[in-house]
Structure formats: structure tokens, C-alpha cells
Length: 122
Image (cartoon, helix red, strand yellow):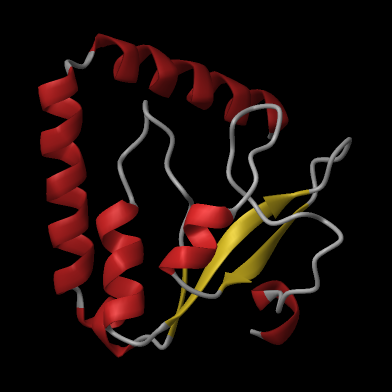
């Protein structure tokens, strides 16, 4: 399973590298519009989403919509030296702006910060 995941990641990385910035922007808009129009998304009160990096589908508009819609937002928090990850609550857009960055330039709350974990609370 791990090897298949590594191969898939490598293939996706290659595909993304071949895309122009305009294509990435178009794909981000398409994915965002598709998600926001889904009844499952509209009915949901709690949403987990990743904070995008430059070479990924941009999730900023999704995160803004989560807060505008008064839904509860959860983001990944990776544990250093481990492959474990929690989905912890992001409190607001200001909270997002103030998140520290890891050595991989990923925004996430500090491990010492107590936050609701969606993996524990559903």
C-alpha cells in the first residue's frame, strides 16, 4: 500500500509540474465551485480541509466559505518525527493568518496547542 501511495504521489507531482500557473488557477476554481455546490458540503456543519501550498489546488476560497457559512473548520496537524496526523480546529481566518509554519513551510498549529481534534470528536 505504501509503495502504491508513493507511486501515485510521484505521478501527481509530475502532472502538476507540467501544468501552467493558469491551468492550476483554472483547476482550483473548478474544484472550489464543484465542492461548494455539492449538497453534502452545503449540509455539513464540520469540514476538514488542507491549507494549500503554491503547487496545490488552492483552498483559500473554500476556507473562507467555511467561515462565511458558519461551519466548523478542521485542518491537518502533522506530528514531528511521525506519520501521524490530527485534524484540529481552525478558529477563524485570523487564526489561519497567525499559524506558524513548519520546516516544510506548512501552516499548522503548534503541537502543544490544545485544539478540538475531529478524529476524536467526529
